[in-house]
Image (cartoon, rainbow, N blue to C red; front, top):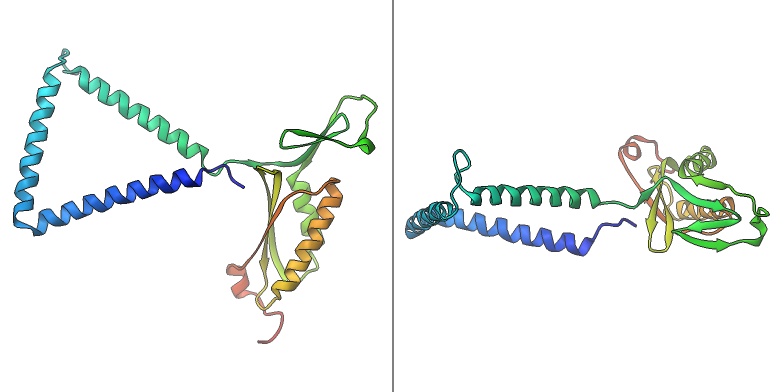
Length: 219
């Protein structure tokens, strides 16, 4: 449900892994093979001489000394800005609201869905269903359920519209089937609350509270 480009991320991680693997292999070779260290020393000296010659082709007054240094710093700043933008775009798509109604229209993912029963006679206004409302309602609905230790609710923008993610932390020894049935009943109640069905991802997990909580039944 997130807007993260997983394919691009995997490609970048693969390239980074290959680069680190190559660098590690080079360091190992330089420390173990007799001729590798001499080859690296000669290569580094050649690169250093080439860099000095390149700096001298576009001189500037001290302390900058060369336009190539300015260009290198500019490229580095652009790379930092692009990296920051890429990191900021990761894991996006989270939204604080599940549905929005305007002028008798329920809007999901920017698309108007007409509902004649919700007509307002042309009156202007907007009603927003916040994810906090659903979270509170779910906690109250599960307050007497001993199989569920904790719940968390979040809303995300997906290709199918606004979607809900429900995480239920199960008590040790509880039945996954019963928890799944409970989740299905909760989803029906959420659809009734909103007035239309929404995509829902349910995760039944365990955590630290599961390990220290008492078992529901003897194994």
